[in-house]
Image (cartoon, rainbow, N blue to C red; front, top):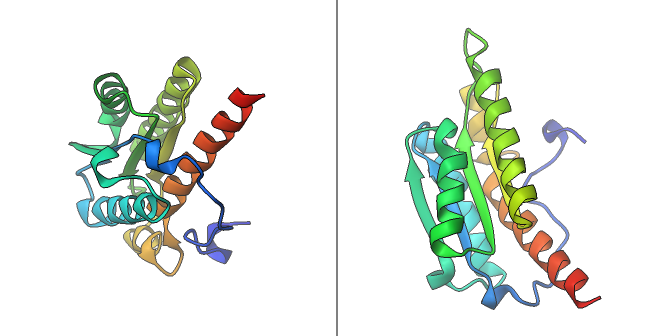
Length: 165
């Protein structure tokens, strides 16, 4: 289902059994900060709602989306986070710049997850317009930051479940 038909903040409630033990790091792009800070706020509130302790949520800022993978790697290395969420916003422009940035960042974030065997969540929205960005950062389509927090917790719960088998 496309996001035009869905509110990103709507999700099936689940029990995050181990949430109080989790450490979650969040790398936030400062570029398009009206959008990315709204994503950050939704992400943090959702993590806390599910039981992640505020002292176990680490937030750091980078200039733009392209810097997110390195920041995510550093956050993992220095905080020993159980999951790392990268939040950014790259709005389509007049050139193909957005395609290069989004492709590089998404591949790097995925690679980090595969190399570390931990959830590295890609929370970079890639709208065509500033209005679409607002719609996905607390507007009519909810908040992608909420979706990223839920994804991180679900992945951590899955990992915990599978380790017990």
